[in-house]
Amino acid sequence: MSYIQGETGDWEVVIGLEVHAQISSKSKLFSGASAVFGAEANSQVSFVDAGFPGMLPVINAYCVEQAVRTGLGLHAKINHFSVFDRKNYFYADLPAGYQISQYLQPIVGKGEILLDLADGASRTVGITRLHLEMDAGKSLHDQHPSKTYVDLNRSGVALMEIVSEPDMRTAEEAGAYLRKLRSILRYLGSCDGNMEEGSMRCDCNVSVRRPGGPLGTRTETKNVNSIRFVMQAIEYETQRQIGVLEEGGTIAQETRLWDTTKGLTRSMRSKEEAHDYRYFPDPDLLPLELDPAWVEEIKKTLPELPDDKKLRFIADYKLSPYDAGVLVAEQDKAAFYEAVTKGRDPKLAANWVMGDFFGALNKAGKDIQTSPVSADALGGLIDLIADNTISGRIAKEVFEEMFTTGKAASVIVEEKGLRQVTDTGTIEASINVVMAANAAKVADYRGGKDKLFGFFIGQIMKATGGKANPALVNEILRKKLDG
Amino acid sequence: MSIDKTTVAKIAHLARIKVPEADRESLAGELSKILEFIDQLNEVDTEGVAPMTSAVNTTLRRRPDEVTDGGYRDAILANAPDRAEGFFGVPKVVE
Image 1: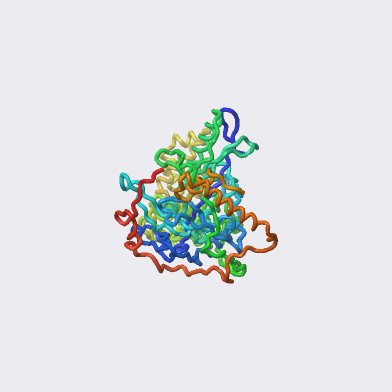
Image 2: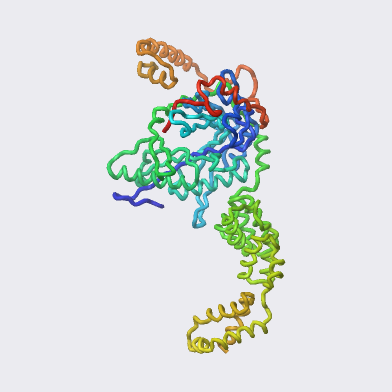
C-alpha cells in the first residue's frame, strides 16, 4: 500500500471523485434551447431555463439514451425506474431556486472502472451511481466592481453526475480514474470530455486516516477543471489535513475551492449552512421508466470500449499492457495504429506510432485529423524499413521530412538517394578506408580495447552517410578486425 | 413530531421567507399540526403498495433532441431589475 509518512507515523489517503460530465446534446435536458458552448450571453435561454413561473420541463430523449449508454459503458446497473427530484438552494445563477436532479432513485446504479496504472498494473474502482441533472447558469464576478453578472446559457444543460466509491488511495490513481472515465465517455460519444470548456468538472472528496483505522473527516474541493489540478488539489489537501491532525487539530467537514494561481485549497465558508437541500420529487416530472428491451438495444450499439480493445491489442498484436493502454486511450489513435499495423509487424508499427509519430504530433500541436502523415504513409515508411530499403536510423530522417512536406516515404528516399547500401563490396571498401585511416586505433583494438568497436561503426556510418546496412557493417567489420 | 421556534426560523431562512419573531410560536404550532396529520397517515399499512405518482395513467413524455427554443434575450432580460451587456446584474456574490 502507498502510505504517506508523517511526523507521527503513517497516514493513508482516501479519495472519492464526483464528476460532472456534460452530455453532448444539441438542446438542453428540459428545454429546446441550444446547449452549444460559447454563444453570446443569455442568447440560448428559454423561459424554462430562466425559471419563469408556470413553465414546465420536458425531458430530452437523447440525453436519457446517453445516460443509459454511459451506464452500460461503466458496466453499471441500469435502473428501469428512476425519479427526478428538486435540490433546493438559493444562488443568483439558479433562477428557479432549485436544480432538477436525481437523489434516492438515480437512472444508473453501481458499476466499475478499471484503472491503468503507470507500472502496467490495473486496479478496479467502484462507481456508486450516475444520475441526470441540469446545470446552473454562470456567474461572472470580475466584470464589475460591485456587481456579479449572470449568464443563463448553461442553465438547463444536461449533466451526468458520476460518483465513485472512496476507492482511490493516491493522486496518481485519481488521475488514472479521470483519464479512463474521459476515454470511455469519448468512445461512447456521450460527453466530449473537454475540461477546459467545463464539459467535464470534478469534485474531490479527500480524507486521511491511520492505516486500517476508521475513516477520517472528509473535505470536498469543488469544480476542479483539469486532471493535473485534481492531482495537485489532492496532494495539497492531503498534506494540509495531515498537518492539522499532527498538530492536534481536527478537520472540519467543509467545501473547499481550488485556487489555481496559488496552488492551494481554500475554505468556502459562505456555503456551509446551505447544505440542507430539502430534496423532494419534482411534481412537474413523472418517474422515468425505461423499457428493458430498449436498454438491450442500446447495449448492442456500444462500440468496442478501451478495456476490451486493450485486451484485444495484447492478444492479437502481442503488445505490452502499457503500449496497448497508450494506444487505446483515444479511439482515433487506436484506429490509426490498427490501420498502420495491418499486414505489418505490430511491434515495429507500435514503436513508430507511439514514438516518432505521437512525438511529432505533440510537438506540432496537431491531432490525428490534422496530421500531415496518414496511416498509409506511415505504413509505407515501415515497409521500407522491413524490406531493408532504408535503415531505422535513416527512417527517422525520412519521417521528419514526411511530416514537414507531406511527401511519401518512397519519394523522399529516391529524391535524396537514401536507399540503404546492402552491397557487401561497397561496405567492405568503406571499412577498408576507415581502418587504413585509423591504423593506430586498429592496433589498440586488437590489443584488447574492445570498446573501440563502436568508434569504427560510427566512422563507417559517417563515411557512408548513414546509409550502410548496420547489420552488415557489424558483421563485416567484426570479421575484418578480428581476422 | 413537533416543531419548535428555532426550527421555524431555520426553515424560514432556507426558504428566504421573513418570519418575525412574534409569529414564530404560532407558526410552530401550525406546522406541528401538519406533521401530526402526516404521522396519522403514516399509520396506514402500505406494505406492498407502490407509491402513486400520477392521477392519470400516463408515462413521462420525451422530446427529440432538437433546438426549438431560446434566442430571445430581450424577453428573458425584460423584467430583470438590473442588466448590462446582455447579462443579468446582481449584487456581488464572491467566494
